[in-house]
Amino acid sequence: MTMESNQEPGGRVVVITGAGSGIGAQTARLLVTRGIRVGLLDRDEKSVRAMESELGILSAACVADVTDTASLTVAMAAVADHFGGIDAIVANAGISGPGATVESIDPAEFERVIDINLLGVWRTVRAALPFVRERRGYVLAISSIAAVIPCPTMPAYAASKAGVEQFTRALRMELADTGIAVGTAYFGAIDTPMVARMRNEPGLNQLLERLGFAGRPVPVGHAAAAIVRGIESRHRTVSAPAYVPALLALRSVLAWTDPLLARLPAIRELVRDAAVANGASR
Image 1: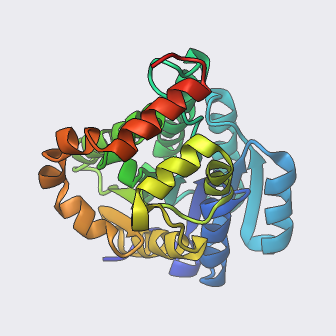
Image 2: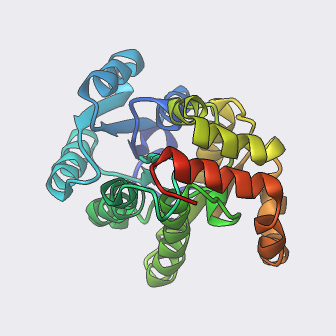
């Protein structure tokens, strides 16, 4: 099934948050090559304006912060007015936060991750829904494999992405009679500026190393291509890299291994180092 719209396929409109770089920017590039118009939303004005210049008349940039409901409301209305409507929203903006334990993390940093990654998705979707409803369109929220696997030293990030997963499940049921389709994207490590920053922070880089193959970044195009396929087919689940579907299928089994993993010397070392690095005693 393809996206339902009042316009021809080439006239579809997709709005992307966090569109100034990384997955959001690459997704916008791929959509434009298919003749799909894109609303580019990002809090970084320089990067989002640069993307608009690169993509040309099939794009429209708006400076919007997912922590600011008013800016999102204005941006969605501006994109809808410019292009005549919105067919799909990709709630992509997110941050990793610091590598720290629950005891050692600065409370403001923990809450900032939740505010951007989870409440930011809620604000984005809420602002877009009136327009998406008119087109019986598609909502895609970006979660993570962190919603499925334990992520010691990244408690806020894991909690936020698990929250996004449950948010989309509830939303899907609420919108079942509207014709709107809802998808959840699960990504592993993707070669984005966010993951590059993680690799430059000793605690987070150590976690990526402990994850083995799941912590090795794949090109950003893998995630962008998965999102485009999701939009075009209105998929319930979008994922990358290739191992993620198996991980999702085995999540119940993997949950039983948490006590065993917690006893591994490497995990204990990871937790201890993150706690000490952030001023907590172990």
